[in-house]
Length: 249
Image 1 (cartoon, rainbow, N blue to C red):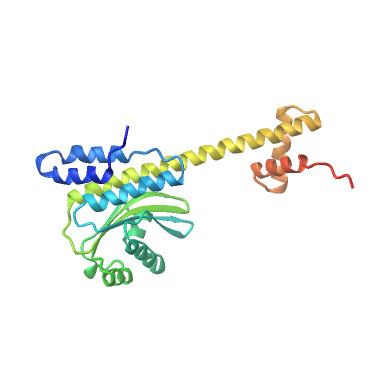
Image 2 (image 1 turned 180 degrees about the horizontal axis):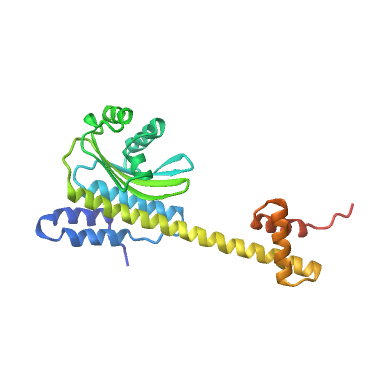
């Protein structure tokens, strides 16, 4: 069955907003974007759907992107225009701005007019010079060494709009779920790979030294502690060294 075109779903949602069909069409849009992210390519598709939907669905939003911060490194994901990347770079340089504040410490940051914004003077001046006058930023996730935010940019000042904030929050929740799903999948796959590596190393030790599984594991742990090396790395090195062909020089 062919998937419906997301842009067409959004267009119909906007047209139906005056006759009570808006909420149902928005629900359909979110469902249509609900692709389980199995790899980085899939998650980029999901996030691109979120940022494009924000521009098409929320009045007053002209650009959007997702800012990810990992160990101090800034990355702009799924920008709808190069200007969004420029604004993220401005925040990185000045270490201030609504996207950065939302990603690190606030669930939502609102700025209705950057010309009179006192919170981030350097960023605000640069944004206005680039033609951006209003912003909404929504926190996606925060953890040790990493954070992320959905950022919506407007070319004109705007009054507070509760509907726009609700729609932005809904899209941010969807993006956050996609990121969390992919992160959990990678953590699970990493755990499985670690278990398999340790199991292989245990099997080698059991065969070479005629010991049982418990003693093989204890030997691996002792090597890990003595060398201050993670258990998986000890197992990988052991597998590599014991699988080398003998030197017949």
